[in-house]
Image (cartoon, rainbow, N blue to C red; front, side, top):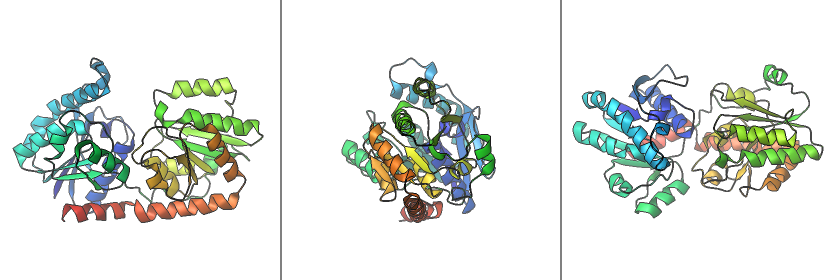
Length: 365
C-alpha cells in the first residue's frame, strides 16, 4: 500500500502533531508499507533515514496580514499546497493523510483527482466555517483522545474514532542516570525536576517555575531543567531572573527524541503544567515511558494519558504543584511506584505496536 503523510510543519519544527506524523509513518514503513512524508522546505529538523520525503517551499504564516491565527495558518498551508500539488497530482497514493483541518480542501481535491482514500488525524479544535461539510466527505476520521473526539462531535455532530498518539517505548525507557549530563550541568545531590514542551504561555511553565521557587525558599535542594524553545522563553527567563534562582533553573533549548531519555534518566520528577485544553500530551507519555513520576493538570485529554499513575492538579495553581513536588521529593518509594505504573500504562496503551494494531483494525473494518 502507498500512503502519503501531508503536513507542512512535519519537516520544519518539533511538536506533538509532528512527532505523531513521523512516528506513524516510520512504524508503517517498518510494517512494509510504501510511505512518503510531504513537508515544508527548508528542512529544520533531523529526519529519520528510513522514510521517503517530498519537501516544498511555502510562505510562513507570519508573512500574511494578521486577520487572526486561523487565517494565517490557512494561507500558509495554501501556499504549501500551491507548490506541492503539481507533484502530488502525478503521484498516485492509496491513502492521503492529513493532520490539520486547514488541509481538508486540498486533500479532498486530491481525492477527486486521484481516487485515493483520505485519512484525517485530528489533534485539536481549529474549527472554521465549512469544517463540518468537509469532514463528512472523509473516508477515515481519527482523533487522539476521547476529549478531542467529544469536542468535534459537539461542534459538527460527527464523532471520530479515537486513536491515541504513539510512543516509541524502545527509545523512551528507564535508563541508568547519565553521569556525563549530570556533571555537565553541575548536578550533585539535588533532586532534579524536568519539563519538556514548547515554550508558549499556555504550557504553564511560569507556574511550575513559581512552585519550584517556593520549594527552594522552603529549603528543598532542587535543580529545574526546562527543555524546549518558543516565543515565551524570554518571559520565563525574566521570571527566573526576578526570582533570583538563575543557578537553579536551566534552559536547555530543544533536544532530539534520542537525547531526551538521557535527560529523563537524571530526573526525579516531571512537570507538565498546561493551562489550556491540551488534547493528548505526547511529552507527558514520553516521561511516563521513561519511568518518571508526573505532575500535570486536569485540562483537556491529559487525564486520559496519566490515569491513576501520576498527580493531576488544577491549572494555574502553583501551590498545588508545590504540594506534589514536596510529596514526591519526600517519598522515594512513591516516586518509584508511580514511575513504574506510568511506564506500564504507556506500554499497554500507547506503544506503537498497540496504536498500529488499532489503526489497521479500523482501516480494514
